[in-house]
Amino acid sequence: MLLENRINAFHKLGGFLSQFTRKNIVLKENILGNELFFDAFKMQIKRAKESNSWFTDDNVLFALESWSVILTKSNLEKWLSAYNLDKIENKTIAVIMAGNIPLVGFHDFLSVLISGNNILVKQSSNDKYFLRLIAKYLEHIAPDFKGKIDFAETKLENFDAVIATGSDNTARYFDYYFGKHPHIIRRNRNAVAVITGKETKEDLENLGDDIFRYFGLGCRSVSKMFVPKDYNFDLFFNAMFKFNDIINYPKYDNNYTYNKAVYLMSLFKLLENGFLMLKEDSSYSSPIATLFYEVYDDLDNLKTKLKSEKDKIQVIVSNENIENSVKFGVTQKPQLSDYADGVDTLEFLVNL
Image (cartoon, rainbow, N blue to C red; front, side, top):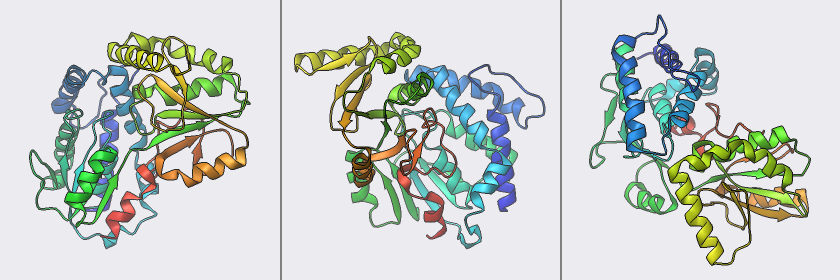
């Protein structure tokens, strides 16, 4: 299957997904496969929400909308231009996917297939409703994909390399079972924010998107922020008020109530506003409805610290000139070249 045809197929997939947005779900004309897949996809959105209550309509549609924006012919060609895909020998790549947010494993799915390899997918039960239908859609509009996509129901067998994403605990399991194969094994990472006190309310409202999108369950969700000594949190909490509706989601409210009770019984000092707790803590991974913070005295020293602990950090959000940082509000909108854990998936596939 020619690279051009693979690019065109994913470009058409982007057009199909563009019908599913947070604003509305609208059947468009001249979209290939709509007669077979549009209603089926609407049904999968409903089933996903019923199966996993973290997968709200807003979060699912945000994920679909984000991929529809990325999957353009120009974006795909620009991304792939950095690689010599002629070197690829057709191999089967086993991809073990997490299930914390909708379509969390799609970038790996895309990378394997667009590079010319075959994929063997092991899905999480928490996110099982979209990728199979997407695979069928691709096979429908580009029949050469038939035979290149398979889903494993039980034990993974007959593969040449592994890409696995999970927690620190599951990563040890992955290392044990798949260490003899060429592999990418991803562990726990979190996003952090560096605050200086010069941020505007708009900056901090954008930070709210980085904190609350997917209820904070994504590896690119900001779970900790660094603030200068004597930082006044008033503007921060004023900006967060925009997101107060999140407490109306029962699972989030349950986590908020439980974690608050645990903290209070342990006599931890908290700052909170009724739907988000701030706890001073040196850890990077905070529980749902909690944002850790840490005070710093010197920005240059903080930059050094962040660099030394980069294996714990997925992305840094800040207005400051910090290596590998992004602006507020874009942590949940990665581009094609924003690889998880900083490991270039396509480079790995090219060099197998």
